[in-house]
Length: 99
Ligand code: HBI
Image (cartoon, rainbow, N blue to C red):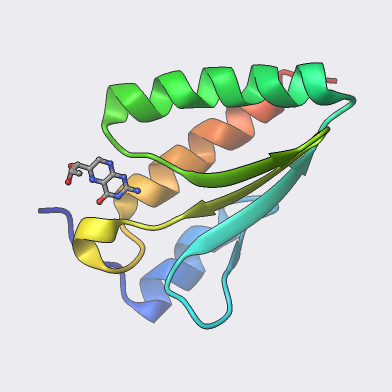
């Protein structure tokens, strides 16, 4: 079972996660990605989905046209864990491949 990060650990992990922030009122982290168009947004989601499946750790996300809103938390730990930080880093890397 992966360990829930303390508030302090969450804050320091976020320092290395460009664009991500804690969600108010819930132990989770979130980012809004904006792409050129739907095609790129969905391409991002397709690649991120494969990483999520490989890691058995899945995002809570919403796509409206070229925007993808992502919230990451570890349900099993009722908070943010290293798995969320890892997936956020992977998502940032995938997003950086798009224009
Ligand atoms: N994804 N975000 C998230 N949090 C989880 O606790 C989780 C998951 N994907 C699969 C998963 N847990 C499995 O290990 C089962 O616990 C559902």
